[in-house]
Length: 89
View 1 (spheres, one colour):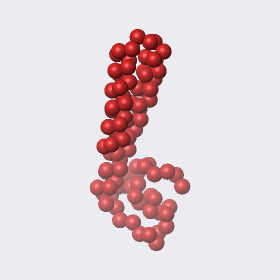
View 2 (cartoon, rainbow, N blue to C red; view 1 turned 60 degrees about the horizontal axis):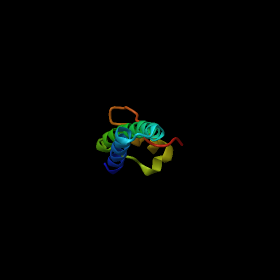
View 3 (cartoon, rainbow, N blue to C red; view 1 turned 135 degrees about the horizontal axis):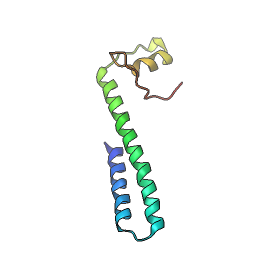
View 4 (cartoon, rainbow, N blue to C red; view 1 turned 180 degrees about the vertical axis):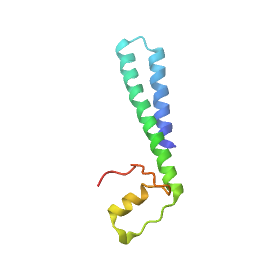
């Protein structure tokens, strides 16, 4: 996915900086940024898996049920497993 590719490219760029820089401050900054980006990349992958699973479940919603009920429905697969992918309301 597009965002994951952006993270991967930036992680690669940070690794190049770490490998090729002689400036310790720059290396430390790149290491810290790389660590943060790696965590964000992992988070996007986990989110993508959850969303894909829920989307493939094709759980029907009824607009007359209201937002709270439908929020629960779209975050619960057919087996009853709940995935917190939407903001709390």
